[in-house]
Length: 231
Length: 268
Image 1 (cartoon, rainbow over the protein chains, first blue to last red):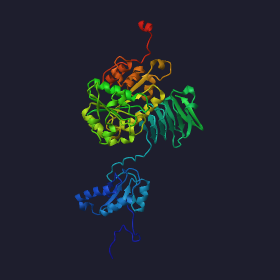
Image 2: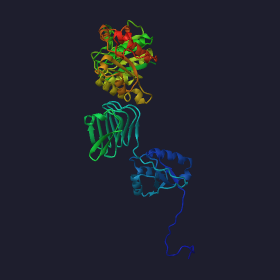
Image 3: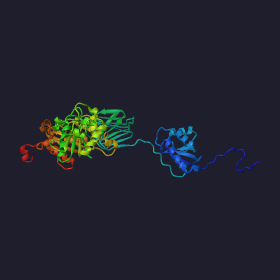
Image 4: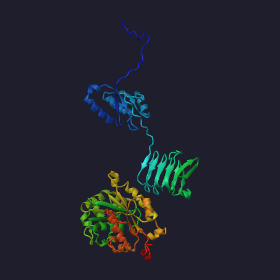
């Protein structure tokens, strides 16, 4: 009968222990599996033995958001004799896909080298800045706030999911809170707009008090009423 | 390489062709080799204003379609040896113009001339689009009147997005404003937009103001570019405009209401 280490009791079939391993991390910047495969192949050719059968972790944090297939990438890597074992920094859909492919999903945290992970940049809507005059017939759309430095002409249209700020004269149309944000506001230094709207509530030029025309103004929604106040 | 200048406005009848003829002639008077190209295919006018309508043999469309060389089609001005006109075809329409063909003709002209003026048709469709597409500079002609100003504004938007410079992102078209048919008397009566009103809306540099003047019509009918009438206010105003384009400082003239004899005498 073979001797066993004394620490292992006979009734135990296994034991869970934490351990740190060094993995090769493949940082992916582009979701094109063919390009990745080509570049990895080149690296492997430099040190074939080192990479043969090497377990690798796919770091997907830098991949631009979008619809792409993780399984194709995994297949390509397996064909190159690599063993993808886990993903890191994947978005929701690709995390799900990784689980279906029986890959581990590594938690956020520090990488093996101990360097702090860069913070995940959320695709939060940012402010769109327009420095040229907005001409008649032009339409400007902002996913967040919209700031226009110059004038906005008659027949031009500003559309923003957030608030709108116009530092020149506002003569065209301005529609803020386009997707229903009732807290969005419109600010302008010279109000001559054809139409102003917040979250679908609108006023035409002729419904704006004449005293306010040509003045600096802010437009906001209070309940069902679209208010125009001098600045 | 020549500088390509488009003379455009959006609205019709504001003085594009008058300005093209005067401005082109003005550049030639200053010694620059200048060609003026009529892009208003089907509504040919430039040759009349330039007084060369009896000498049109081949036109712009003939050159684009390879039926004539540029040398055969160019009409040399009889008054100024370094001025030439390429007439539009009267029997065709704007569809006869192609971007590739226009580009080729402008390239050919660029080799021989210092300035090539493209006299745009009204509107924002194909003819106007092709007239502005290759431009380095744009002269936007506007009357002090709301619809003209709005159309010019629209055209300025297109100049910023639908030109070769915009598409290649290799710089932008330099925009210049010329206000024509300006009548200071009617401005002070409130019947006409003021210079300030127009500039507020368009916010581009003002190159010149051409006063309303009966000489313009007389010159058109006579086939003389108005800039050659150097005794007339309109002619002098175009002269100033060309000088400013070439970088000279000139004060604005003919923009104040003319004072009566006595008030002028006593500086009232």
